Image (cartoon, rainbow over all chains, first blue to last red):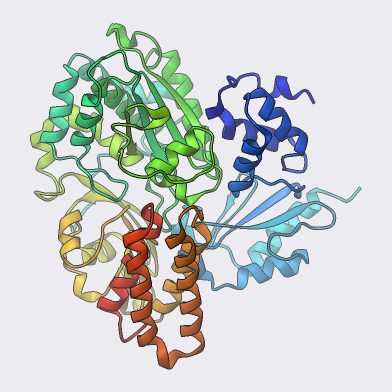
Length: 155
Length: 414
């Protein structure tokens, strides 16, 4: 895909850095920023590769490693923690057979911790890509993940 | 029995946030017309007169902030910026999200009024990257406001130009701190700057910048419409107006409730949030999120205002209230909060980088050896105190808040 066309609505100004990185990452089927992406952004914004790398590496929403098609962000804020106990991490880890931060071998899921997602009245919660899932229980999580799996048959 | 009273959420839920036509039917954007006919200095005076205070947590007088930004440079030709802090990340807080998702237009109205008052022609809304629905609603609202001529060149034939742009955060709690937010807005790592200079003097791109919280901006149209006297008739003398409280934890009806400042914690929990779940007893509330304070039942009847809570060693903060019943452990909650600070410390300054890790070492020690807990609490207090005195930004200055309140209210239950 032509990267220039993808970000043509952003002026080549350094303050557009985060918006541009978001756009490039979202268009990558593996939800991450490649070395080529960073080099391209450095050139586009007339800055150094290292400063683009420094930004991409700092923010937790950006990844420099390939991730699954579905990114699970499990809220580990004090409220979600208090309501659920810590067991929900284990539930997801067991269902997907990965550890926190890991990606399933079929590249379907990546599990990440997240700070407060701002849905504390409906705790515990998690996000999968853009969608919020609330009032989680062990069964509910299994059902949600199962549904996504069934909609994505392995090729 | 207290009731909800609304300013920020006055139109929330009453219209489809994706339709500016519906918002206009409710009388939307009329306050822009009113404001643009005023003298900018009079708008600033009006906000000072109304004693509006920042709703992001610190409670700084908004009118004064506007005045400082306005007076930072003599020449009108110097670029000034307006920034809306929508990087809501304080645990237990979700008021800004509700405003952006349900009534994005009132925020845009407030931003236009503030920009006109200080003479800023360019504004940014820095919104949390994870708030996908808020981002969508803001984008739609911004486009519609532009099409209707409320943004852009020569707004409503007043000669005033104002452009507004959305910038996305990318998952850093620290970027909710105003100077760090400006760094991030400039496309850099979210590292804090040394204060002073304050943003009013040297903010975004080194230019005078007014930066306020989402909820604060939503009060501006209301004050323009109803005047300072009416605004001051709500709430308390030192903290007038309303506040959105986000109540979570062990209550029957967790959620967001906007009511006047100065109501008591007891009435918020019982009248609005439906009381403690399962007829259990109240044990503690964490006010203001992680950078907040624990309180026990002796604070239940204290008016919820910036200054009244301060007298009790507590803070109002962002308006987050995390309620804990008798079955919960304050130690576990404190553990979770301090782990959060350790994770979010950016590492730029030593007292915070080493300090937040040190606090966790102590917490782990306390977990293993509960007989030494009271000794360890004193040690935590000592560490947090030097962090508060030496750290660069509010993150390192914050752990002292919950720790000190634990010592004050829960020394024997720690």
